[in-house]
Image 1 (cartoon, rainbow, N blue to C red):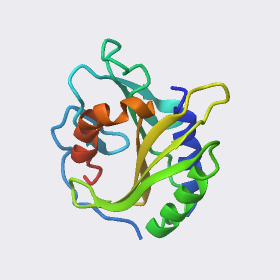
Image 2: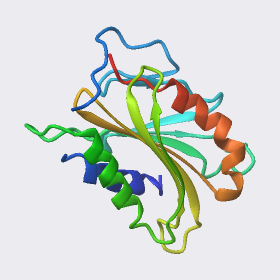
Image 3: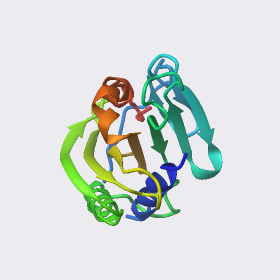
Image 4: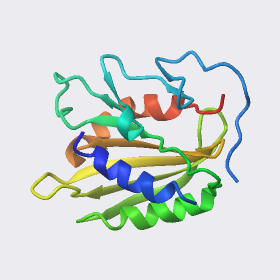
Length: 181
C-alpha cells in the first residue's frame, strides 16, 4: 500500500492527455476480473487482491510466507479520464517518464514498447527509487497502456534484491492482462 502513492502520482499526471481500441465482447475468464474498470488478469497462486475503489486501484499482494515477499505486489491503477478529454498514448509515455524521474534516488534500468495479451500497445519502464523517506529503495516495473480512452498502469514492486526472484509471479499478471472488452 505504501507504493500505491507512487502509482497514483504517475497515473494522475497521465489522466489529462488515439488510444488502442480493443474488440467488444464479454470479459475474459481469468483469475481476477474487474467488470467496472473493464480489465482482467491471472494471479500467482495464493496472492490476495485488495480493491481500493476510492483510488481507482487494485493491489494484488504476495502471500506473507513467501521469502522476501512482504513488499512484493502488483498494482493496477485506472483513473477515470476527465470528461471530454482524449488520451494520447505518446503523451502518456512522456508523462510517465517525467513523473518517474522525480522520485528520490531514481535509477532507470530499462524501458521498452511492449504488446499486451490482447494486442494493445503498451510501454514498460523498470527503475529503482526510494519513494518514501525512511523507507527502502524499491524496484518497480510499470506498464502503461491506453485502451478505449482510459489509461491503465500496472506496477510490479519488490525489493531490488528480490525483484528477479519475483519476476515469474509478476509475469503471470503482465502476460495475461486484458482491458479490451
